[in-house]
Length: 253
Image (tube, rainbow, N blue to C red; front, side, top):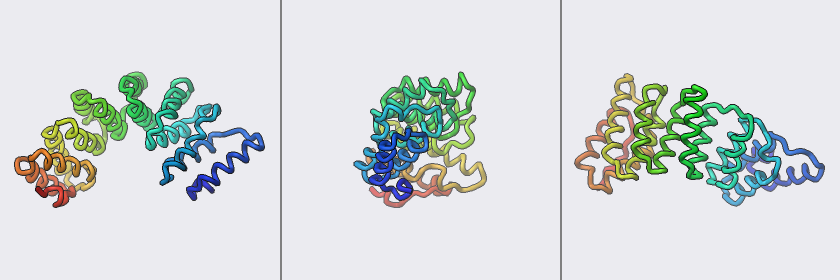
């Protein structure tokens, strides 16, 4: 009840009462506290909720749901101390990861700046276990490579998998928003045009194929680079024709 109402004080009081009664910390309690931490608006309260992970029995579960909620909350709050423990716990336990869990593990290792470990989990997923990534997990790996400034590796990975993954809106969005930060504005424009063509070839308009925030970042990069006349206006027309939202203020000089 306390978690649903986002009441950190009450949740911690209940755990203290469990300790007083010598009741064992179980997977339900850890999962509930992680979901609470993930959604608390106050950072101080969120870190108090995450502090449950300091307990020695917090990572003693062979349970993918618990692991996922821990990874998700710690990635969101960039809690590197507990993220490191969670990744190490996965390696030492018997959790059989799903494609979602691999995406979270890759995000975790990217946050920890362990690019080699991102590749290790990717290869474990696709080579050792033969799991086809979904678009979200592909985007997680692309984001990790972009964050590590492995731009060519990110582009090569995308080219290798884009035809094998059912929908590419997350991975396209990752590249469109991420490439300009590393000076690859023209490549981001090329991929945006490619995304527009894909939407048109599917005989429909999909304003959400590229995340609005990704498009906004691209057009701001074009604006800052003085490339609106050369590339921005024609790109905006193509995006709008494909049903995507391009705000007029993104095109202001």
